[in-house]
Length: 144
Image 1: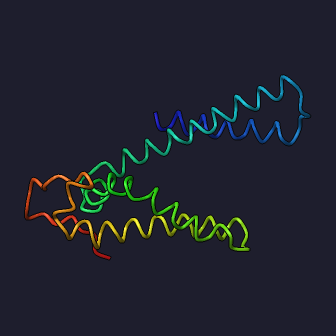
Image 2: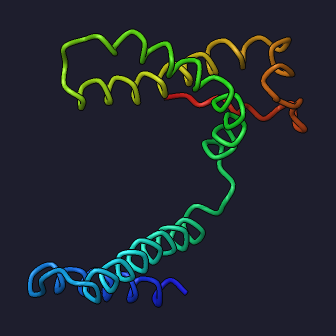
Image 3: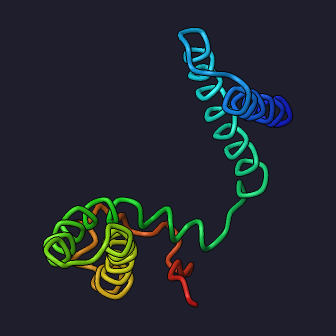
C-alpha cells in the first residue's frame, strides 16, 4: 500500500507540474488539474499514515504521555487561542508573526498547563477526562 501511494503521489505531482508548465487553463485542463490535486494530496496523506504505522506503532512513554494529553489539550486549546488572539489582534504586526505567536503560544500554554498543573493535581483529573492509571508505577510525565 505504501509503495502504491508513494508512486501515485509522485505521478500526481508530476502531472500537476506538467499542467502548470505546459498547458493553458481551460475546462478540461482545470478539472484534470483538480483531480490530480486531490489524488496527489490523498496519496501523500496515505504515505504519511503508512510510514507512521510502520515506524511509530510501538509502545513508548512519549506516545503514552501524548495520548493521555489529547483530551485536556482539546479542552484547553480554544480558550487559550481566544485569549492570545484577543491580545495580538490589534498589534500592528504582519499576519505571519501573529499566527506564529498564536500557534506556538496555544500549544505551549496548553502543554504547560497540562504538565505543570493538571497532571500534578489529581482532583483536576476527572475535570479534564483523565482516568486513573492502570499501572501506578509507570510514570508518563515527559522529561526533557
